[in-house]
Amino acid sequence: MILTVKILLTLNLIAIFYQDIRDRAVYWFLFLTLAIQITYLHYQEVGFQNLIINTSFNLIFTGFILFFLLLFIYFKTGKFSYKDAIGLGDILMFIAISCTFATYSFAVLFVFGLIASLICHLIITRVARVTLSRKRNSKHIATMVPLAGYLAIYYLLVYIVYWLGYNANLYLL
Image (cartoon, rainbow, N blue to C red):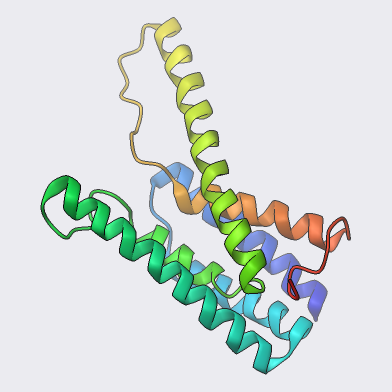
């Protein structure tokens, strides 16, 4: 059963990445199935009580990040609106991955995931601009960051490294 969930989780994360890169939109049910799959894996590692505690603190941490993002948007634009700063899919991804690991591990991985997403997007955008300028093509390079897609690949890599046993138990840190 665990192997089946791991395979489905891998396929789900790849689907989120592919859809977000291709369309800048992801089917909502992929986030729901992602949350169910990672919650099941988390439950198998630590049990129900620790799952609830970890997920609660992770959701609070995610809520603080979204709250400070909203404050930043308000001070920058003068209105409370996530619309131009972050997509609904990104928020759903944040909520789904809040079920992943223990709070300390989650906070560290989440922050590094955001940094890795920024670096990845800057590199991809730079390469795309150079390629398009060589072809003298006037296509517009999308300014929206496929954050959910980048985070999906990042967490897929984290899970693969964990499953191969190359790091400490992320569920207990």
